Length: 335
Image (cartoon, rainbow, N blue to C red; front, side):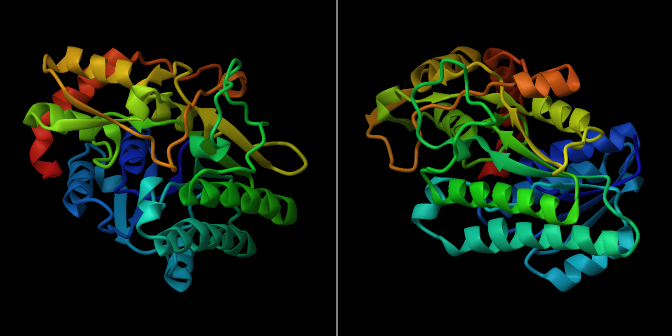
């Protein structure tokens, strides 16, 4: 399956990785991003420069555009007529919501709703989408400690612990209602702590790596007693690619998938793995847990495996070693 795919957030961590893979597979990729300054835009520009060096770069076009600009978004989508949309643009981060709130409304709610609106514009113009996949998050599950079976897509998500998580719960509800009302095939992707080369510098893998290499102190929330289901970027991309030709066929064509590694790791053990792969010793400060930080994330990926015959599996030491190699070669981008 190939054609034209629109990727929102194409200069983001996951957007860049998906664009690389889809170009390799023969897709024509149209990328949009507003290149905001939530973290250093130089890294986003570097991701775009990397795409410009791709062997199939001639099949990639980029537009700097904010999803909140509905007229511009509509004009672009009607001109490009994608058959698939992978909607990854969002205001990320759970702790940032303690400092700023408006960006979550702007990007995660208005932006998401506008993507839904242009899907209808395409259908009205005679070019209905074959599939619209959008980024959700493990944060929708809220603060849980009992995960004997892992988090299931059918679990209650009515108690998000952060503003970011609340917007993702809202996006899932909006998407379900949209699919019910207009029949657009929609799939929500609940990402579990994605890490790897070209990753986000506001997340612990690159934050901790940078501190290790510079000999700076690392803060371990909840004294190291937090658990995360770290999932390697290549596995995330593989899951997305496999799901593109698998839209829901139910009466309401909306479904959700956990995209996680099924291997929750305690934060202090994760730091020990980072020390092992770098050969460096961390300076650690054990601090209380912020209110926005959930205790545990743990993906159950049985539904994903049933749908595509595969689930993420990259061992944490292997993924962190690859991330460290990338960091050593690209640390200037993270200044």
